[in-house]
Each structure stands twice: as C-alpha cells, then as structure tokens.
Image (tube, rainbow, N blue to C red; front, side):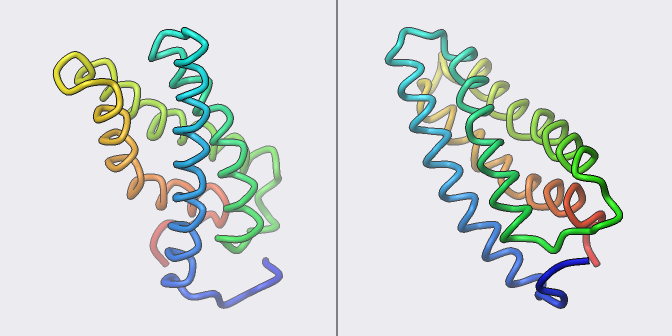
Length: 134
C-alpha cells in the first residue's frame, strides 16, 4: 500500500496540517497576485485554487497519507480535485460571494479556508487512501 505503512492517524493529521498551512500560503499568495492583476474576486479565487490544489494533491499524496496502490492515480486525482472543488472552492467561493460585501474580501476568504480545512482532511484521506476514519 505505502512506503510507510502503519503511520498513525495523528501523524497524518499533523502532516496534513503542515501541508495545509503551506497550501494556504500558496492560495493566499496566488489570490493576492490575481487580485492585483485586477481579476474579479471570484475568478481570482478559482485561479488561486487551481494553483493550490495541484500543490496540495502532490504533497498529501507523497507525504501526508499512505497511498492505496489499488486506486489508480487518475482516480485519486479525480477524487481529490472533485472533492476539493466541492469543499475548498465551493466553501471559499460561497464565503466570498456571501460575505465579502459585509466583512470584506480578505476576512471572507480566510473564513472560507478555515471552514473547509476539517472537511478537506476527510476528503483527502478518502481520495488518496480510500478510507475516511479507520
């Protein structure tokens, strides 16, 4: 299954959190650049997400989780990206669309990132390892 079988759930959670922090920095940096280039906030959010999800998949696949060799790479990518679109992109876009007018673009973006983080752990684990809780 993996090059490091038996990694504990706690270890995976810590690794996922480290990747998540780096991923958040990448997402925010790309979002900043795209806003600076005068892209509308929702479009900038999609562009930043595309950059961040590529990094996140690779880092989580090769460092955070144990790979299930029975899940083809194409299926793992599809699961990760589609769930990421529903969770990360969906939540952050909803927060930007729904809250940016009230609390500002940045607080809305950050709130969306926070809400999506816990859901993403389960989604990433399922898409890479083929399991949620065990």
